[in-house]
Structure formats: structure tokens, C-alpha cells
Length: 210
Image (cartoon, rainbow, N blue to C red; front, side):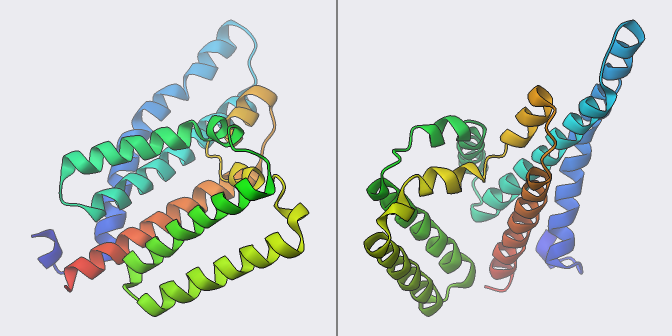
């Protein structure tokens, strides 16, 4: 019924996203009073505290966008909830999981091939373009094999290094524990949020006109 209303798909997705973000913002606003309470009774670092709260809020927005995208892939709410929970659990445990990846060149090659396969699957699901998916897959696989055979040393620790840059929790931990503000983390949150909202729009648009 919603898809028959005279509003664009982008408006539908953004409306749902900002509605959920508003609900999430309520407890964050309450948390904003905690540093002031601590300051009234002791010592606190307001800049670090509020930057940490903002970082967690942005991370929550990323998780919401991921959940919305997953819900757009299926009409079964149970499946959507379970898959969203599992994926968000993996993101929360990302640093620990990356630490378990072997640092050998062969392990990096296999891992990057898996990442490439997932990327090709997403491209095909969104575009339904077999030729484009094959081009991306073949070109990516050829590039990985060429690098592995010509410069195997480049593959050492490549996969853990690449995946560690996509940690959603590292910017928050660095800020809260070490007082290190990482602008790359903020860029990661904003980029991932925009990416999954875009994918959601494309998924719903495809279903709307199918």
C-alpha cells in the first residue's frame, strides 16, 4: 500500500530511517545529561564525552541503515530480524574476528576472493546485470591473481589490514579509551549509512516496478 502512494521511494526510505533515528536519539539525549551530572560532582572531560556520544549515535545510524537494507530484501520480518542481529553482531565483534585471520599471503588471497564474491553478488542483486557482474568478478579475480604471483609480499597481512579499516567500533573505542578523535571513523559511518540507504532505495525501486 505504501508503494502506491504518490511519494518517491527515496522519501519512503529516508522517512523510515529518520523515524528510527529519532527513536534512537531519545536515550542519547538523556545520556547527554550524564557528563553534566558528573561535572557537578567531580571531574569530567566534556569534549571527549560528547564526541564519544556523537560517535556512538552515528554508529547507531549506520546500524539502522544496515537493518533497513536487510529488511528490504525479504518480506519475512523474522528472517529480517535474525539476519540483522547476526550481521550487527559480526560488526560489533569485527576487531576480534579480524584478529583471527591468518597473515599469510595465501589466506589474504582466499579472503579477498570471498569479499569479491560477496561484492559481485550485491552488484548482481541490485542491478540484475549479469554482464556487469561477470566483468567485475573476472577483473577483480585477475587483479588478485596477478598481484599474488608477481608481488606475493604485498599479500602479507593485506586482508587483516584492509578489513581493520572497516571496523565500526574502533573509532568509538579510540575516542572513549584513548581520547583519539579519528575523522576517518566519522567518514566511515556517514559513507556506510549513505551506501546502505542507496542500496535500500534501489532494492525497493526494483520491487516497485517489477
